[in-house]
Amino acid sequence: MEDRPVIPPMVYLACDSVDGDDFIVHVRATKDDERAVFVYSAYDRLLNCCGPHQRWVVLPTRNLERVAEHVHFDMILIDIEMPEELRRKAA
Image (cartoon, rainbow, N blue to C red; front, side):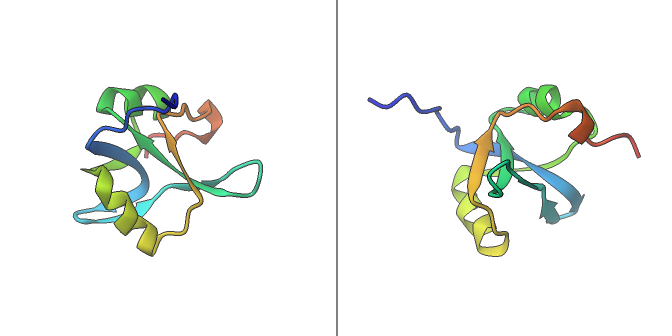
């Protein structure tokens, strides 16, 4: 059996903005020039990894395919800590 992380049925997706049902997904370029989105398996992990000012939406994991229809990304990073300098600051 492969050593892969267990993906929960619901995830917290890091966003740049959220307005009701509309949201803009947070996408970052990697060192290899790939585009990555950040998802978190629990709210406390999002807070610990991104800080208290990170915007987010919670959605069924299966809906990430729908997100991919509207947002180009090459990979999904799960429960990854954002460096302090990249975290959202208080508005």
